[in-house]
Image (cartoon, rainbow, N blue to C red; front, side, top):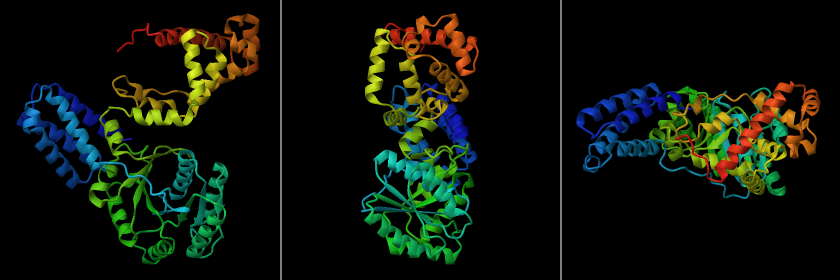
Length: 435
């Protein structure tokens, strides 16, 4: 996300770091480049003007002129102002309710039903709570079936009454949720245009009846600046508490994310980061600003790791690495835990300096990981614990067992030995890193 904008802004920041001091001339040149980058990213022109004026004013202040490294302070100013533009601070979900009611609204085709599945999955994993999905989209053909299918995939119950009145369905669903001790109720409403008075009236009736803790507008980030009109239209009909931007992973411009809060005062609460059912992330302005400027997002990386990786197993693996006793059985366990984190290339992008090291361009073929797993699973427990006993006849048997070549088995064993040596050196502090 934000690839094009990130490239342009990082280039400007790098150029500014090369200047010995900040002058009216060089700051004006930088501001022209930043203005163009933001406009090309489809950021609202009023927002662009205000942003560049503020950065220029602060960059030419006394504090910057007296700074030893004015370029570094310029980076800080740009990051702080980007953070402010994105909303300043993250706004958490209001989950104070018994149950907490979350109502999702949006245009047809915005990805609302899929998003409600992702959000229920997020809440269950993040907060270890019990969500209930409610099918109130009684107009779109197969909308109820789609939600039922999502619920089945996730193992989350869906409450539905067919094509009845959505207001009555939602009231009955809340009663059912209370009786069955659900923590969250997520209402999937029908997609509609913000200028459709009749359907907007229905939304307003559901809102009045339920008084939800959260009313979240799901919007396609690829709509560009039209999204602002949609947000304002919905916000007039019912008080929105937040926005969920979908398809931000597929939009290289992403300008709507930089305009929403500033123009509508409605916070972005979640962003869609992939099509998978775990492809939803809470939105943090400061972390996002850091990612746009190529500073990485270590906090998000650590959070993902904490969710997916068993701490005790990780500690045991670290001790084995240090003593050189790390075997293929341990390696297989670690691989399985890493797979829970999602595609590796997405994780590498969160590292600071990923772009300079070309890690953002790295493509990791999931088939390769599957091949490694198949080879190890074809070994006996004794072979996994003692890879050194794997000689010619054993290699042939392992290759036949996993349907791969002896050459691929040899390659894995060789790479594993090299990795073991490198890990032991790193754990003992005897290895000089290449940066």
